[in-house]
Image (cartoon, rainbow, N blue to C red; front, side):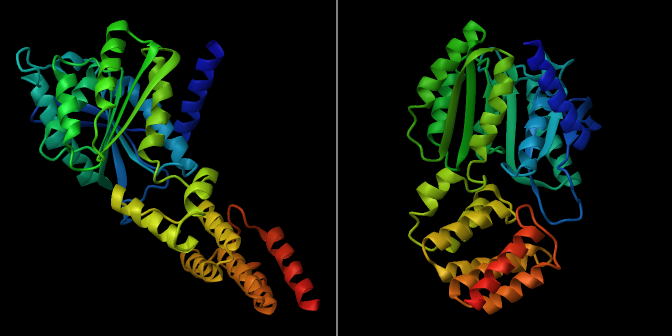
Length: 382
C-alpha cells in the first residue's frame, strides 16, 4: 500500500512538472471575501489562438484539484481526451458555509446561496474573460460538494454539461428531485456517480438508492454511468473514479481504437473517409470545439480504405492529410500509398522521394519512406 501511494505521488509530481498550477485570488462581491483558485492550463496553451478548451470546475479544490488536473494532463497528452482548463476552488476554511442549504426546502441558503451565485455570476465570467474556455463545462464534487453540484441542474438552462459525483452526501429529497430533473433533460448531459464497498455506510446506501432510480430513467438525453468499486474506501474511490468519468464523458472524442474500427468503421455504409468527416463533425457539434486531425485516426481510415478497396476514399484522405500537415512526411506517405493502390508506381515513387525532405511524424520516419521507395522502384522494374 505504501508503494502504491508513492507511485501515485510520483505520478502527480511528474505531471505538475509539465503543467504547473496557477494560483489566483479573486475578490467576490457575492461572498464578501476573497477566494483562492488553482488553475491548470493545457500544455502549449496559446491565448492568441482561436481554439477554446472544455472547462472543468473542481469543488473541494484543496484536495481534489491535483488528482483531477493530473489525470487531465496525462490523458490529454496521449490524445485520449481533449486539452482542458481545470479550475479548483479552495474550500478548506469555508466548506460548511459554502455548501449550506436550507433545512426546510433543502436548497442553498444564505452563505450557500452566495457560493452558488459566486460560481455562476463571478467565477465563470472571470475564467471566460481571462482564458480560452468553451461552453462545454464539467463540474466535480465529493460527498457534500457532490450533493451541491446537483443544484446547477435545476436551472432552466443548466450551465454544466457533465456532473461527476463521488460518494454524494445527498440533501433530503435530493434523490427524488434528481430523478425528476434528469428525466426531463432536453440537452445531452453526462451524469457520473460512484461509491465503493468500503465507502461510508450511510453514503453508500443512499448512492445505491440513487443509482437504482437514475438507471431506470428513460431519457436519451441523459448519458449516465455508475461505478461501485471493490476494495476502495470513501477517499480511494475518487482516484479510481476520475479516469473512468473522463473516459465516459469524452468517449466520442477518443481516437479510433480496434473496437470502433471493427464495430463501427468497417460496417459504416458510407466510405471510410465519410466516417472520418462525420466523426469529427459530431465531436465539434457535441463538445463545441474542433478536434485536430490525429495520426491514429488517419491510419485507421487508411487501413479501412485499403480493406474495402476504396481508392477514392484513400485519395481524399491523402489530400486532406497533405493540407493539414504540409511540412510532414504524412502527406507524401499517404499520397504515395494512393498512387500505389492506383497502380501508378512512378508517381508513388516521386511522392516518397519528396517525403524525405519533410519532417517525420509519430509513426512515419525516413526509414519507412525509404522502404516504400524501394518497394515502388521494385514494382516499376517488374
